[in-house]
Image 1 (tube, rainbow, N blue to C red):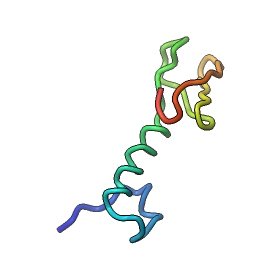
Image 2 (cartoon, one colour):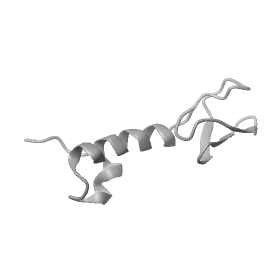
Image 3 (cartoon, one colour):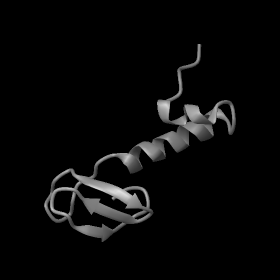
Image 4 (spheres, one colour):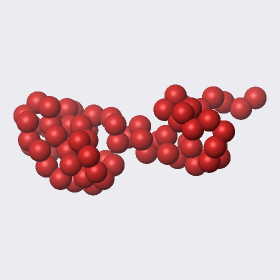
Length: 69
């Protein structure tokens, strides 16, 4: 029996194929996770929009890669 898909890609239903949905799910999981701040070294950085990041501890806003730091 096939394994269940992650919760964040179940919204696509049977569309787009299993492999594509799994790859999209992996990208989305990393982009929504907390990242390490380059200024205060705390794991409190969240993505605001594509390439714009905000540290919730020290309040610094900076640019970086689109999906990960």
